Image (cartoon, rainbow, N blue to C red; front, top):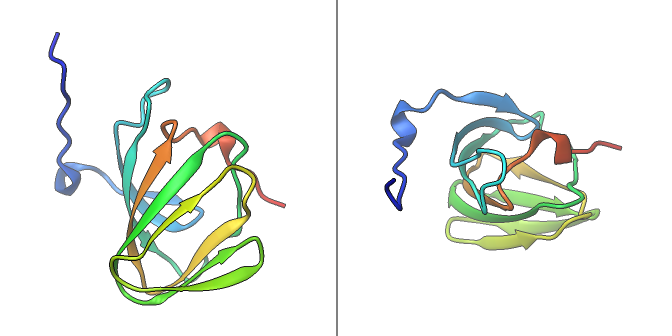
Length: 112
């Protein structure tokens, strides 16, 4: 068995998510982490996770992250770690890398 995996994002089908549209790699159940390329939509919803920590890296655009009600301005190369329980969403014409730890689990996505 190989001790590495390769993903090609441009060959990954985009799916809808509460933030907009995402392409995911390494999101198998039990993975230590996953990585997503996310295009933020105007309809991004405030949500939180009970177990997952997320690390956002802003690739393109400017806008803000709403973190527990506080608006934080972001621009390319801004990185933010979002801990479990933090209610959050991204706002603006943004393209981000999202690294969930542990790997993304749809069952760990909650809305008020």
